[in-house]
Length: 133
Image (cartoon, rainbow, N blue to C red; front, side, top):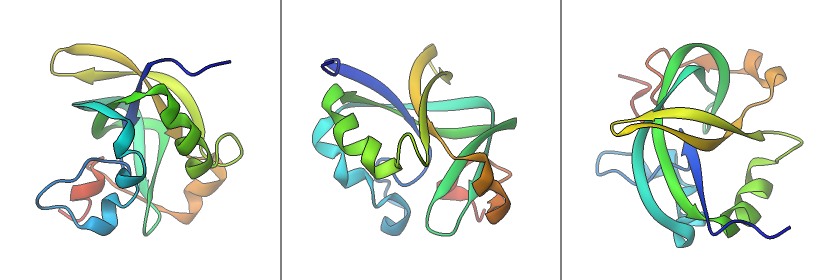
């Protein structure tokens, strides 16, 4: 089955777009998909919590809000993203509804596997790039 022309992906960690004050080590995977990028929209995901696993984060369902971005990508991006995230055996992809300044939108997310949670620590503010603030 061919991939769609465009997909929305909610990102919250190493796939976030570069920021002037971000440590390049925190967003090192963005360059692997930058060629597929069409647009970036700031977004929030309610009903989810973010965990820190050292060099990468993981999202889980829970009481909280994760701050991130919706990357609008060429559908071929999943050819790179799925192996990168270990989908479906490690992180798994699912459609969620996120909030943007212009209203709700549907986007894919990569959820971390539940058995990974005990190995990490929660990020209370839900923001990977500001986790130490």
